[in-house]
Length: 412
Ligand code: HSE
Image (cartoon, rainbow, N blue to C red; front, side, top):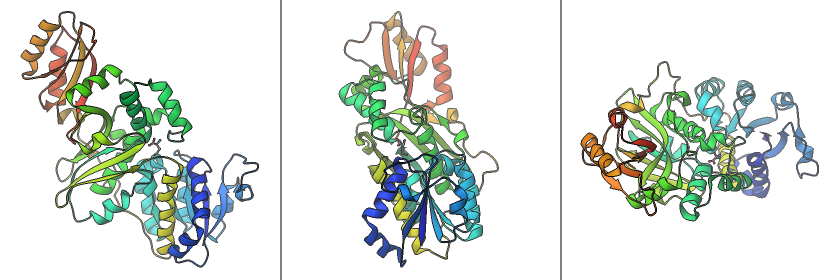
């Protein structure tokens, strides 16, 4: 069996490295007589690279080579990844992808082609990097109804928030560190503004609830507006700020899904997920809470998940191994404003005591938060639980306060 890699960036080169480093044991587990890396497709040149002789620039070379049975897609982005992966599946080749943008946008279409062609389309590395999540969710927890999932699914933002919380470092410095370590996306906006985490929760929700959940249908907020003052208030409240991606079953046909920074109580297992680590808390109706934890980004952890999928494709040679979910005909994600939550609100108020009296009058029993060296005109509080729409409507009526920051309280 021959393998081709499309995209020789951080992750693609990690795949080549793992295939070479662990060749003997991988070959044994693959149950093939041979397992060779034959091509690496990339538009760039890699003079002096140990795999220079394998680099090609023409996708058709892979497509028309019948000896290539498995194609690893680590190009990222939607185009031309979608066209290349579709063509490979149509040609009867199995595909392993780490590309969450692709799976989140086109997973339903690609899974259908894989099924028609009786080949595998696997994407364990697309969520949680090296952490086994996709396979355990679809197989080991298959007996459960999954009531809800809460995830820290983006390593870059978790790394940034951890450094802000622990070391008081500024956002730009930490983002640069994440990029140097190869955690961040090519365009880090996808990390920082929550789009990467959104794609990942969409993949998990599609897998668990059986219908494609499109990223556009999920309300998404990033961490770029988080201020060190919010970090301090979260600490004094008894928790931390994390970028939480969540999906919950609302009823048989609908679910809620949202990605946003949130206050996470210190007692939650997710509060102790630091640096580039990712975690997913799954609440099943038979098993209870299960937490998956590990390195969610980086060259070798991601390559580890990809190569495991390659071995799986080899073992399934001749029979398909693809997950299944149907395309979505109408939006199944409910409006986040109709969901219950408590809100943390930091605001400016010229007359803080009067403003807090008005806050209590409007919201009822709020928890007032304080921090050292806060400006005299700053107030902060956590509201009781209500629908987000009701809470925001009440906030709009408070003319004596100017909101500076509004964050949700996560129930994980
Ligand atoms: N940029 C992603 C992250 C890479 O930081 O988690 C792994 O998907």
